[in-house]
Length: 446
Picture 1 (cartoon, rainbow, N blue to C red):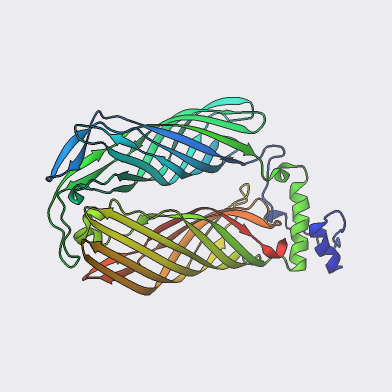
Picture 2 (picture 1 turned 180 degrees about the vertical axis):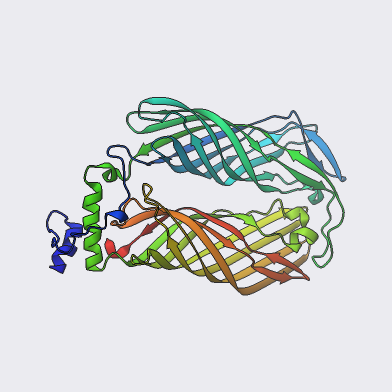
């Protein structure tokens, strides 16, 4: 009988559970859905964007510890986006990952200097007061969080090379979207971004890392303006079974069978892109190399996990690992970093029975190997160190039904501190990490 129950998971019509085994079906585990009205539908597409500067001139550093006025460049980018229409077609949540950064010259009296812009991560939400149903055009307002990276082309004089800047921006926008009857979603949007300026220096001569940074003149490079983007996406329902009649009772029966068979608990494997959103303050940037703080950036990186989920506690014990690399270059100095870390973590799920949205929280401990290399001119200093580090995690799963072999997960991890010593100063690798979308599978249920 147990074998027949197990076979019923894969061939639900071929085997029927013993009524005495499933008379109290675990319906509470299966989130309620509206029949014929999906809570969320997937979107995948491309997003070209153009930045239109608001100012008529910007100031860039030049030789002789001076600045010169230039016409601002018109910057662009093409990104790949993944997201979903949520809350019954009233909001689109998405993440855009850069593919190509389109640079341009900041022209002036001297030779042109190329400037380019890209985003490590662009997470946003568009809110539609009127539901964006198939065959309709709807207005929206939008906001989000961007991690923006600007790069200024080098000149022959290293003292006039500011490198660039990486910072967070808050976009505020509006626009319209058209959703066709056949799964095409087209969005035209305009937005203004708060925080689009950063300090640049001139005449910086790097000192040995053991000494403090010299005084130098700075100005603010203001690239504020309006960003116009056109997003073209395919929109489809990847979990259409959840809005069919009888969904809850059928999956409650499957879940009861899985608990009897022992497959409700089991191994999990997760993988997806991640980024580091904030860095802890360090004496390295504060007192030794302040002009490298802006140019320093860490590209998106893969995050992987291997765990064991127990349905009895609705919790998971996992090992999560990632490798993060970073770099910065400005005024003849450069920085290279790398960190390889693995975390042993426990996470506990809290299911509010809200259309498959299941938040979780937890924590753990990790072991990290950290490397840093600083160079200016002919001087090169390196440091490597292994450290035991704590982690605090929270996030949410999109778990349409527990009786399936896959789900989508978002992790937010905080590493309070991971500092290492280098040349009488310290560099802290701690901060917040954001795994914006991770595919988690249960191999034992395949």
